Image (tube, rainbow, N blue to C red; front, side, top):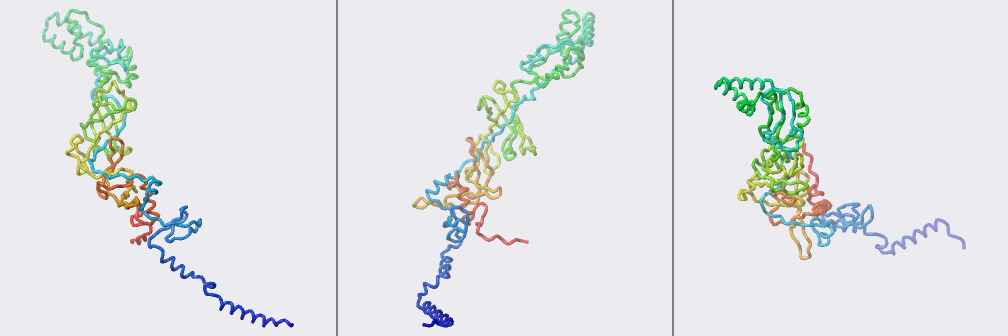
Length: 441
């Protein structure tokens, strides 16, 4: 049999293909891509967000992750099951109503209270011929009347001779004038000795008219100024004496807290080695009116009494001051509860802040299955307070009420979940999916 011509073979193939296509069902030839795409678009919830379990991709419709291929799941903001709450470590606390009392803590070093510093001054000129042992040690207290230096003074020798002559002449006015001169020199004892018949003394002993302790910083100066053979001029300070029982504590309080402190307020003193020292009487003496620009703090000077046996100059000391605020958020009397204001108080850990915007996540409800529903609460905050136990609290002026339950741990995770879902959060007040506002010219 002769083969068919090539053009007949082509025609036969076309006919056979057309018959085959005509006989096949439509489902075998066409896929409902348009129908499926329409169904997918209509199934998507407006505003819903879907995230890859590996957080490789976040989209607005379900399906597989275009990065890793895993199935994406819907992100729901502010809803946590009991298991999710446990795994995320979410903890809550109830907003309380209470007074705005706080503990202000400050640290500084103790130093001598120089209100009680006194200076030993010789009233006559002379040359040092002896320096007494009491001027060599700053650890011992110099008693009143204790000898300091012995001077050879020509002016005192001459005055003694004049006094002897006046005694022989029994010149009452001159005697009175000479005795007054010795009294001004703090040498009344020398005049009395001449009156009692003693001989003229070549030297006189300068004594301390009061008790006190030498300052350690003065020892090097004393070694030079009181050296034997040195000339001493009248009314020149010989040494300084301090009251060892009177100390001053100088601390710096942040400017946001210093306004709560007032002069005359009691202070609790403590040290690292001895702990609280209630036996020390401590009172705020002065709050500096100006702010140190480098420290952003005010200097507070606290006077201490009865502290020398427990503290030493230079000791690092902590001060705790109890303060309270009135209803107008101004300082109130910490000892009079009637002057205190009452506010909604929230733990600091419940507050998320950008420095300008403050929010908290509060529980708006719970369903029968234990699922917690959180809602975002923008806050208007007052001052931050620290209680006696060191816990930080915020005064809430608006946004929360006493009795509200807020997340104190895990709030950042809840807020992150809201960002993923595109709903309002700390950084996105209108939601991450909200259109950006038009630029205003």
